[in-house]
Length: 376
Image (tube, rainbow, N blue to C red):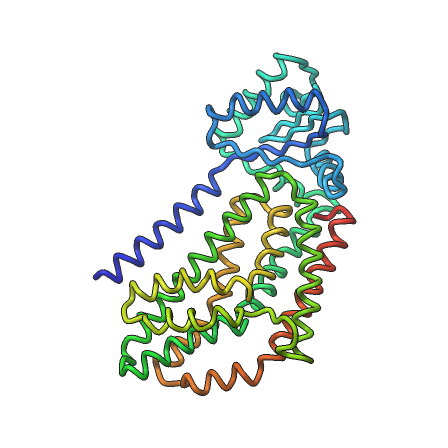
């Protein structure tokens, strides 16, 4: 009965998270640092923010190379002409400088307080109609949507590579080995599922926090560039482990952490304990799996709305735990043993590093190219 209550509560919590993300009304705002008109717009948006908690402002620095390509596609989608900053898109309305598109059949110029009132009315209509994000419009524009079309394959490939990282397998195999030695084979399935659920929730919530922080900061271009370079470096270093495993630095759980991690994992004797250890272990696993995840988070921050981004995060982490589920059910039903699983992991350790490193390298290079071309 407790297990059913736990599962229902977990499903409800995830549903609420998704609902809140999808329900947000997004306003896309292009600004120029030092522009006095943008400063006044910032003051206006900050003043009305408490009245519209559903409104999410996504800011782009117009001077960033990646912003120009996105702006061009939005202007085409709204049938608006390029003009001075600030440039704002919300619901069916575009504000270019003092000129509004979408309020009437023809563009109308409303400077000063009249423009602020018109923009606030447009925000109210967008919230009342649960209008989709302005970024969703660019998928129907000629030449647009390349990054959006590549996002799903990138998420699936990165998650698949991340899912076979050796760290998660090692911990789960050690956990099951401890249970078998203690004569608790019947506890493998519930404890394994509890542990995996904790890993899933921890990674999802950490990813959601990073994703939200990137979008709120409005510095996506430089963050994505830095993450892309980091992905290339980590990819090359991971490929090094195929040829010289263990030399210098290895992208795995540091050796000095492993004894503590084993002691904590060996202490698991109950479902709640497995859940707690899963959350704690997920922090130790970050050196092993943070590379692909952060790269994907950076990509999602530029190519998806918040609601779609949350769905992609749910999908990424679902793919991430699939091998762990296979291992859990395989050991529980006797299709494999912990010794056999450990031999498989050890025999393919170098190859796994080579594959994951190559994917990280390609992902980093691809993101830099797409960024410079204005596709993200």
